[in-house]
Length: 68
Ligand SMILES: [Zn+2]
Image (cartoon, rainbow, N blue to C red; front, top):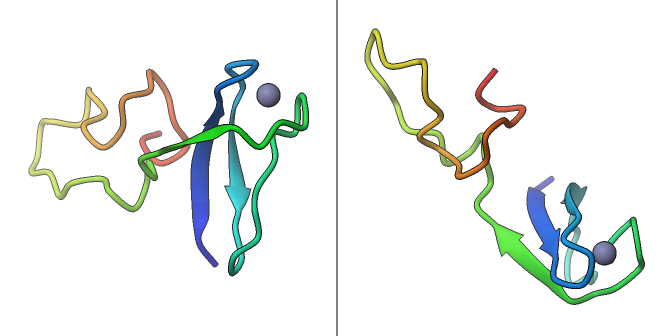
């Protein structure tokens, strides 16, 4: 199942959520559906060679589950 990162435009809360079909996700913090879809952190992680593991190149966040 696809796991997506979203950021709520209303309260700026960032979260990951499973989205199935045409189901519309809601912010778990405030319930708003005005969400910004972020790049999936682990699926877009580039293949890196040795010695380049200090910085996350696959996402814009300072920390993510896919990079640690
Ligand atoms: Zn929210």
